[in-house]
Length: 595
Image 1 (cartoon, rainbow, N blue to C red):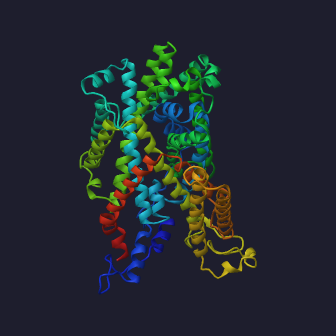
Image 2 (cartoon, one colour):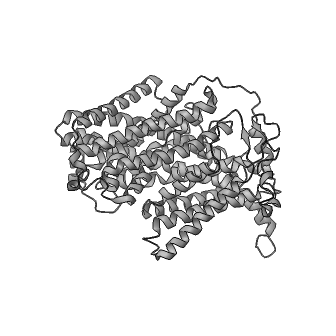
Image 3 (cartoon, one colour):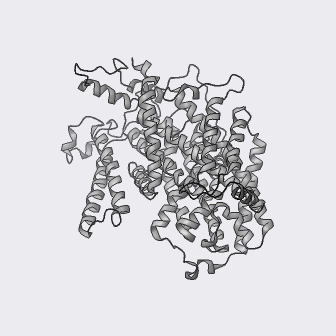
């Protein structure tokens, strides 16, 4: 029913090409049609045969899925780097704040997973709610995230294996190749890290998958290693390592904590597997949000405990960030424990790398299947049923990044993509809540007053006469645009008001009041309009407040990332826009439906 709704909502254009005026300039009508193309929604066709899924996943099953999706490489990759160079022992606060922001994003993701009748990603959810251009950018960002994530995991994988052999691999490479002194490049080319994605891509392209038994075994090993680190770490902990003599608890202050939170946010990416399992869950309206909350709480607790013992065992400034969890045991004289932790890290990162490659080819295939990306990524090998060319191309690019880039630089690039993607997801929640549902939808219920979503609440019409003349949805669209713009302005004032902007006290206060007032007024305008209600699926509580807070916090964390991260990300976005306007917009499958 949701599918047919979007099918009727897609606008119709007369031609896929832009007619121009005599002097070569596009007419106003042509520009309007072009803009509508950028915002057209994906048409989800009704299946010819409806086969309802069996609901067999309990709340416990969903919780375990979420824990397995989130606990993995992030623990071994992020903890040491954030503790050593960004937050110090206050990395525990960074993980706590990242968990709160992740929970807000996860709730929005859960509602979209319940609304869209297909298992999908943020790309699909954005395509059916906000439009084609935004969906392409989300899909493009996901590709970037998996590429950088795979390269970072490969680099960390190499570091932990090197630790087992007392850094003999690093010593050999530095002696025979030399040491580089180039910013953002590694000290030496890591050929082992480059070979790992190549082997993994060959494994994935062959169509071979890890058996469920092996997958469960590796996950169990990972959880046992985490318990081992926590228990033995607390035995060897020394509170003196948090004292002022060793730099204190928060040596980098609040900015360091927030920068660490922006990086740590990526460690919680993986909760989407719960939302994707909505159709297979018992009582999904209750089970999905509760499982997300419980799994996030458990994973956040594990990360906080591990980072606590990490900084209590050894002073934060003595950590080796590239293999910190094993290094602390070597420094304390427990080399056997360091070998165990390094082995567990390799198991966890192996499954993570394979997962990155599987997910990477899936999102690239989905975007290519919609016509927005080159068709070579949609071609499937007849025997393996895998897009072999796409997997191998991405594997080579991932290997190149792992060979040359420093792990610190890779980590900086990771979090900006999911933060931006989940900002789109939160915005999609507001868009969908104020859209009119299809008349045949049995799962959506009208408002008590009998008004349609997007219309002003009758009880408020006498007080908001200036909004009463707007067409349904117009005031909501303007208010949403103002909300996002005011959130960006407010976050910029909070982050850069005293440093980069060099504002006087009165100017800082004035901008802060104006941006926060505008943000609150846009929230009030949105809340004054009727929303659609669904009785049989989960919905985010306190809309538009909850997704608005998610948007505000996501942008706040993104602004704490380095300028190099933003520069690299901007270059990647420009490449993506070139691909879309040069290829995707003309080959989109929605062209044939709108012609």
